[in-house]
Image (tube, rainbow, N blue to C red; front, side):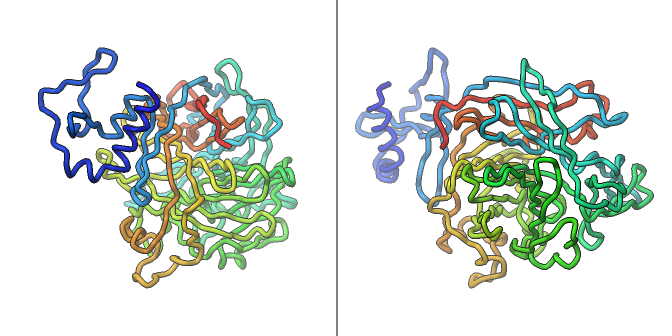
Length: 481
């Protein structure tokens, strides 16, 4: 197949598709198709026009070994070469306690200048579970003094080795630990889950400095990290030694959380306080030049209430690191659950992001299934160039009488809103990635994609011999810069 033929076929299928279908007829039913001697059937019947046979572009892309993405708003078909799996690495580490695995993988960051096989990662708030007591589901923390930490890791010969552990701490005394080290316990009785001990019978302490760490990013301008915290949602700046510097929060929460040990700036939009429980700030990334920080929510805001949990509109916020104030917000359109089997829309989430440049992100989008049941585990390259900046425009019901989360994709288009353009960089389901929660992604040298999962401390499978942390590397046949 020549390149010239390929381009002509794309033009006929994507540009002239309407005219083609109007004058074309179905291909004869006795036509048979094969690739390398193996028969196959197109997903949609081919059509015949003027003695030429035309295939659906998705089938054509699959035959060429390319991902195919269709943007309905822009009427654009994108073809992307598939990556090559280059490495598999597992973590072998002593358990934290009986039945509780050691955890990393809720984030992943590579610092420019470090060796290509060295990364930083985190675990989340620590081991936690759910127990039903008299019809009420209670959140338990079997290790309440667990200290969230940043881990420096190295990949070598199929193994993940921890080179350094950096406990998160404050310049002061944490009320739970009695030391400078913080915990992963909830912050506020007024808005967070009630924390219980292992048996779910007794309430334990809240911690105003507790973090549910989900994302990690590095700022080359001042040599600090930023963490996305699901509790708030908040963004927390951290020194390389683990000391918390300051916290960015939605407007309206300052009076309850501002302290001398962790100053708070309420620069984030107030509507973010309407986050769904345990579905907060899941991802954070910083541009290579250190000018911009992006934060992504895991799920739709409950705006105005939980009736919109099945919305496809997830918010991405762009922040100027010089002022720590938002400058843009985008409505990221999650995949439609209707194209999958028995998948709830609310079970499709964003789990991490990586910033390529001012207008290009890698977004980790996934379902809630693992193994053979998994249907959606994709990394998308997301282009914000012509996406509509909706900052402050749809937090309340506008002219349509609806908030952003209440609007359907069709209503977004009718409002003239351009959602970010997505194209698939990795479909991990095709590679049979075994785990549910791909929660850390990174890109090295513009072409090495790295993914890792959060094992949730093995609480759902405590008897497994394996730790359950799997980090895979892929080589992209092109550069993202």
